Length: 254
Picture (tube, rainbow, N blue to C red):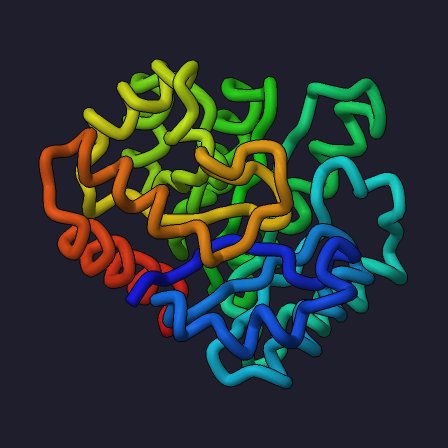
């Protein structure tokens, strides 16, 4: 059974059929889902899903693009939520320099604060990094970010950066992009990185794999990702599923 390490089933894209999808998830070969917070509101929603479904766990965190909302009062509430018994990680947190706002300084401030929160409560981190490879790495290295484990979600950098993050103690999150014809760089990463350091994810409702690229994503599409990884690495599908699930359970302590 596949371990879905990163999804957003609290997203409005699922308002019409969320319960139907989740009720049938085991029939599609999915064992466990980690629903990841991107703001205080989505963290609360993720925890509610985790309380409702035994196979759903939550991550508590504020995405870099949402850090302008943060202040000490909101952060105190995030700290409280992060200690919930079904919260297995702090995330998704990090840096996103694709957009000009929030400012890089605000993003870095709250990235560091959330890293320290994770260290305090001894939970792994889920890292979002876009167009910010070196600064993300430098902050993680300076703060011993991989001390309690973590994953570089939706990895999009070079083989060299993948090796550097692994040396810090991180896993590499691989999603639907690996199935795209133009994903040469990511295929090189998957070829090089040991399967023992790879996690499967969808980032649902985003980044649907081929043949569903452009449509709403779901954890049901994870087999396409696992199969592509198996092809690239010359492994069996079952072995990819088994090893990545063990990786995820180890990182999330599930």
